Length: 162
Figure 1 (spheres, rainbow, N blue to C red):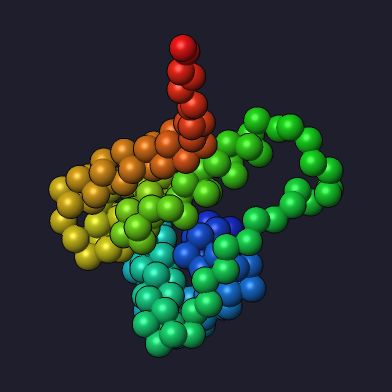
Figure 2: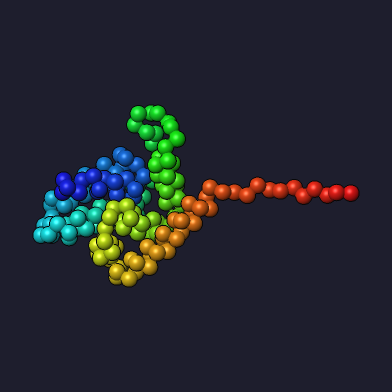
């Protein structure tokens, strides 16, 4: 479990949008995982842990207990500089927030958490082909959100000459 602690916390943060709620999700996940019989191999163990966390979040969300907070955090040193990596991270986070939840979830599992298609399929309970098609559509939507979200044409005023 310790080997997956940081990735589970990151996944919980992306699901909930709140560091406090992500920590609660991680604690609930650990409690449920320790009370159950885990899979034998590491590959299935990681997917199993992510599935537990996802199911906890879904249960809480359905009961109305999950408050989704979208809070951007300042860099730890408090120093705001033009850092391309930071700007790219913020841009992708904002674009992810504009995706519908199903598309955001598949991008988070495969691209951000690093699961293979088969692992993501087991977590979501869908066929591998469905994961591949959802991911393709989600990546296209993400790209459109990034490209289209920052550029807005200025209105032009036509000049009439007499």
